[in-house]
Amino acid sequence: MSDSDGHEPCSLQCFAEGEPLAGSAGDATTWIGLSWPKPRWDRSSVAQSPGLPAEIASLEREAAQLGHKLALRLFQRTPASSMEQIEMVLVRAGEGIKLHDVPIERAAGLARAFLHGETVDWPTRPLGTELFVCTDGKHDACCARLGRPLFKALLQARAETGHKIEISEASHLGGHRFAPNCLVLPQGLLYGRVRPEDARELLRVTIEGGRLSEHVRGCTGRSELAQVAEAFAHAHGLGAHAIDVIETIIEGDHARVRLEVSGVGSRWVRCEARRFHAPSSCGSDPELPGRRRWDAVSFDSAAGESDPPSLDDRSSELS
Image 1 (spheres, rainbow, N blue to C red):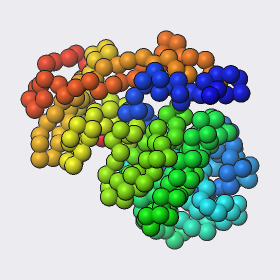
Image 2 (cartoon, rainbow, N blue to C red):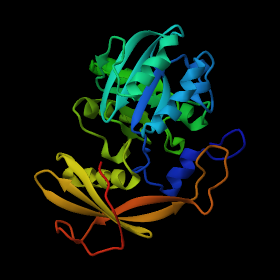
Image 3 (spheres, rainbow, N blue to C red):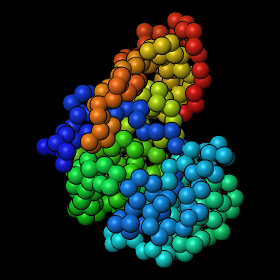
Image 4 (cartoon, rainbow, N blue to C red):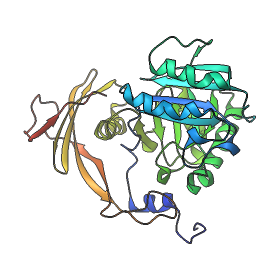
């Protein structure tokens, strides 16, 4: 299988090279989604999508000035979205609200109030757990080719199981080389390489508050090392416990991350930096000298001790 330029899809090249999922969820601390018809999604900038008010484009800049990194996204439920009255999904720090039937001319002002921590002058409801699947083929072919089958499989699994959960198509979620990608809100848990045959299990664990460990990219808004260490702990039997990232110790291409695990105590995760050369997008050239990514190797031999073997560069990171 190859794209129109004869290149192998970026998702296949990334998988073949063994680039890990964990740690790739990004560091956006705030997520704002606007319902918008998919045919009108802009290829490179959602804020420039035809029909959206021009002031939407200023939201990411305003968020940065307030110390937030904003992920501004579009989504479409079934049936297709209206352009006159839209739905908004606003999430920060694992908590979210949604607004219905918002006149499009009010959207930017309401989003701005949310960013500033002010009262949102529109009827709101708490955001329950929802799934957003990236199907944005305008941004990268892998997202449409792999995302659409996953979206359809999730809808079918929901119909067969009777689960009550919203499932939507979303614009670019980041990391299309990990397609198909699926975001759980308001938790901010991002998955990659989720196959249609995983749909029923994904619905089950999501509703139960769990996770599919082998597909976890991480929780958005946390550092790469924090995501890597947390995913490693979940995958190695600690997922039933609350996990906090307390400290990282970095030296060159080696790092240790200290986790505080409820009911267990401190655990140190040893990580190493590796480089991956597969292209980040379909049709692009391999990256040189390669993307530098952290990968968890093992629980450190100093696990459970208050002071691991010292390294020079110390930094604290809160999850």
